[in-house]
Length: 142
Image (cartoon, rainbow, N blue to C red):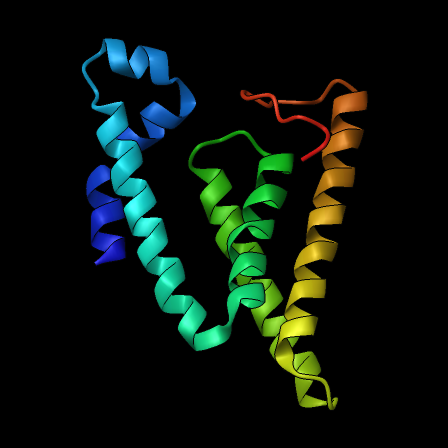
């Protein structure tokens, strides 16, 4: 249900995310899209929390997206990189937990955070050298 909904609203949601004022002027229902996205996200989190826990859901939902936003501004590449970073964190955490006595969650959270730090460093280096292709400014405190 979540994937089908995202497929239906992908183009207008992407347009509204990049430039909400222009999207509104072009007749895109920005407020309705925001509500639909919030409901889909809320359903995903509510269902996932019951299975894997709040810490793991947040580390797989927020950190990979923040890391991807640090290295690219592409509205297509950002979610793809976010999924790749989340899968790397999950698989890496599972593999590390196989050999140890610690549960999977700390490993996944740590790997996800290390990926974020690496992407933040890459983004800062690119910005210093003037290689930035960022379309949307992200405050440094994020």
